[in-house]
Image (cartoon, rainbow, N blue to C red; front, top):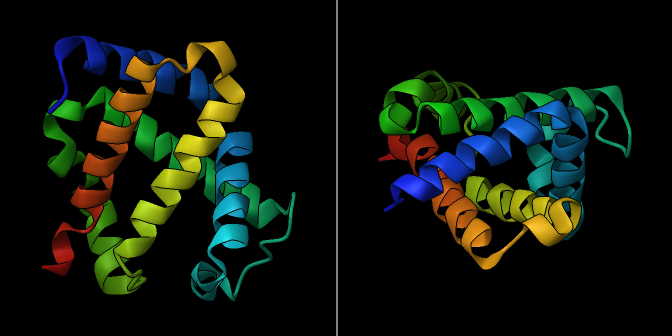
Length: 141
């Protein structure tokens, strides 16, 4: 899965991303809603227009949860258990959407990180976001 170096790199990346969690999260969500319009159905009760308070607030929650997962990568399943239950049983989010959002987060980070987004960084982020999505989808099985 992830090497020791990749795990250390992820903590650094998400530590930096946490500072801009609201912006990165909102941009990632907006990207997902634009590229995959069916994902909007889960947010019908919120204002998800560009720059909206709901979009920024939810985006921040997502990025901070991912950053927390990176800090606790050895116990990712335990760390994300409450979110997995929430998304599976209460919100009933289709698990495919986790993969779609992960992709949009990856693209957003690539745009924002510029030269820091090396092939090693890309691989580490992709592996981690895949693991994150898989853990969130565990309760669907």
